[in-house]
Length: 258
Image 1 (cartoon, rainbow, N blue to C red):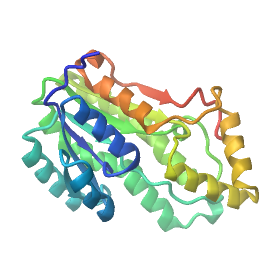
Image 2 (image 1 turned 90 degrees about the vertical axis):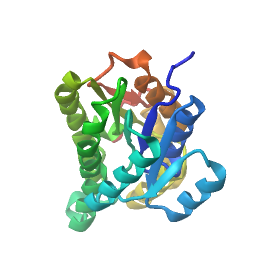
Image 3 (image 1 turned 60 degrees about the vertical axis):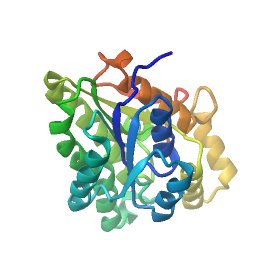
Image 4 (image 1 turned 180 degrees about the horizontal axis):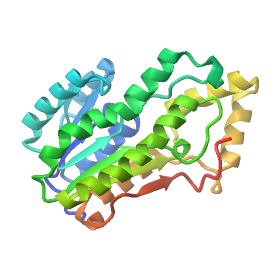
């Protein structure tokens, strides 16, 4: 399928590794120009050899000064902006709510939802000049279910859905589409850390915790970063031109995270 996105100008936050890197690479394969940011210096350095087509910045999306510099550098490299993918997020603490360190709560929300605001507010004036403009915000299955022992993360991911639907209404008249992606259990190092933390908190084995998570997935399998990237690239192409305000689950039909 020809998605007709050659030359599309894309900014992906936390794009030096994991899901973000797969998203960036998927756009590049379709002929788009992509700028990524990350806080992982080693991951950014590795891109210079593994993905030389990507331009990059070091930026923490929770820092407004970092985000301001990021947009200056991204726009200089891309020559404009058609797509913002708000991918940056952290897992946050694993603990009962009365045991969560308030600083951990603040940091989780600062990155996972305020970071999306920090980027979106600067993107709008550039996206409105595009003929094919999109914002994609990464939420989670935790953005439609409760997630025991992960209250900061779940709260932020629910907020992402509300933020997305509101922006779709505000920005639709400007020709900017806004959607949220809600991954479930995603293969990779991050989910392994999450499963390990929850297993330790509950006093069960890693295998028991993993099996419990997948038991709530109808397809009994995790999803891959590539499957998430495929959906995002489609949404941002002209073929997704009337899809906006949606919270799209890519989760194997997850029924619960409890």
